[in-house]
Image: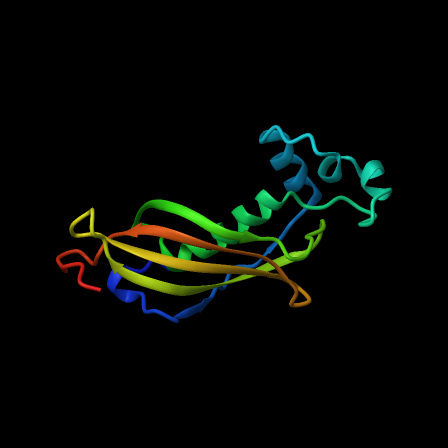
Length: 155
C-alpha cells in the first residue's frame, strides 16, 4: 500500500500495521556492530547471561528502527519529504532474540506547514508490541508530508 497524502490523515486515526517482524540474533548482532555499539548486553551471550535478563537484549535503536520501518508502508511510503524529529522515545520492556513485533500508529495531529507552503506536518505516535501484547517501544515522530497532487494543503 502506498503512503497516505497529508489530507488523508485525521487526528485520532489509528492504523494497525499488517507487517510483523521477528527479531533474530543475527539482526541484533549485525545492527550493533554496524553502528559501532560494543555494549556486551547486546553482543556477548556470556556477559548477558550474568545480568538480570539472563540473555542478550535487542539493541533498542534496532527496535526503534523496526517500529518506524513497519509503519512506512501504510503511512509515508512515497508521500513524505522527510522526518522532522522524534520525541518521547520510550522502551518500557525488553525485546529478546525471537520476539515478534507488531506496530500501531496513531495520528496525533495533521496541519499545513507554516514555513513550507504547500506541504504539511503530521505527528505520529508509533507503538510496538511483542507477541504477548507487551508494549516494548513508543515514540512520537513528526514528518513533513506532501498533499495529494493537485490539492492544496489545507488540513
